[in-house]
Length: 123
Image (cartoon, rainbow, N blue to C red; front, side):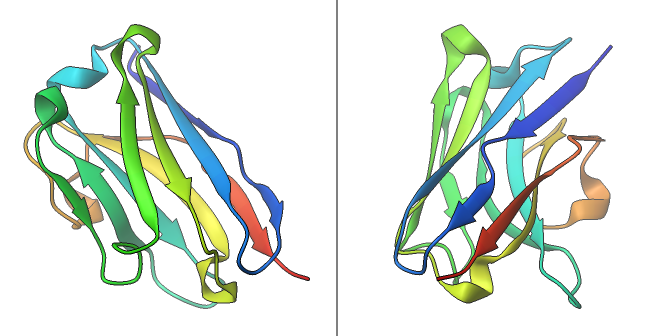
């Protein structure tokens, strides 16, 4: 019964902030790599951020690394993606996923996915 549930999306203005949540059930989230991916309109899915087991190294895409931050609350079995200084190109559906290994940005190598949460960037 491994499940991931992404939430927290919505409408945000350019330059604004939004925090996404990924709640895990059926496994201990801190034992695995948790990645954030997004798919913008008309584009392929891309990796955004990832955190390794036991709050190991954090990884960010070039687009995200200066503006987004991943954090983990082990008591809540939850990983967050804090999005700051949002740009229009950040819009899309955001997914969290678990890989029973270490971080990378190859979506095909992740084992379970949440359903995604929609982020819309507009004035």
